[in-house]
Length: 412
Image (cartoon, rainbow, N blue to C red):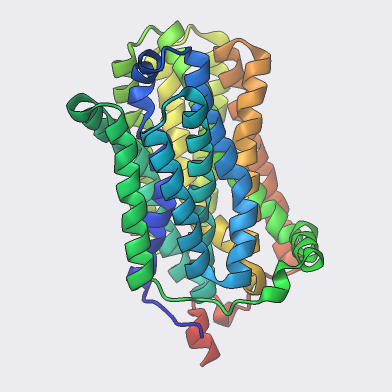
């Protein structure tokens, strides 16, 4: 039996689940130099712990999302949180680098459920402005989590050592299981027939043939994928070329997180007067302007903190305007396979970030990579939005009367 949760409960649970992945990615970064010494290893080996986590997180979404359609959102979340708990314990008590690497991979697999289920439980229950408000709340946590995590990780490292950081993640896993078990209602009707190979292929085929889903997902990939991509480039530009210390770099990244958070707050206030859809062009304007500025400064000027981070901050501000509506729009036509749709959207988004990082490695010159790849992501977002608008004109997303109505109310 499916139940409906309130908007507030859905927002809180969804925000917590979504934040778990990025927090787990950023929490232990201050300990990376300490891990090199603790395991008498190389920086490359320790950096691989981040890559494995990211890879597990990206690809496992395809499994966790589809499984949530098959056995339900709650059961899937509990299973993957148990996997995340196991990975956290492996990392906390790792006797060697191979075990630490394996633990981080398992952690990434477990944390993947947060992104997919959070979006799915929103789509199961809400559409229109209500759904966009919840997505906006989730966006706030995506901004705050990675911003606060390095500070929290530094405190734990200084007081109790590197193992305490992974023990914090053990605590997060236990808290997630407690919240899901007591407060999260099952929002879909499980359908085991969707777990067979042919229905899975049919579901992914349905998504990839739908121009509304592909175009709106590519808007998100260009916006959010850029955020993941520049995370691999900025340390080399700001530390190696601009000359910031690692501590200064960490503080400087608050400019990105702060403007993204400011964007989510501004978006939430503006939704009192404007529809979420009407605010997307404003976000794309900021993304386009930031892309042009970054292309100019990185190719024509010697990099400085402000010449790098001002366009990055403006781009992040724009992302906050684009995410809520475009995520809602991508999910809206697929209530029957919401978990699978969420999984495919997350996979494409993460793959864009991985592709951007790989291309940056091929370019080799960090400033040139930043000034070429990130503007290309901005162009992808803009072009995909024009494609999306054309497909919606040809095939409307939802009936106007239903656009603002919670799904459960519409069914009554």
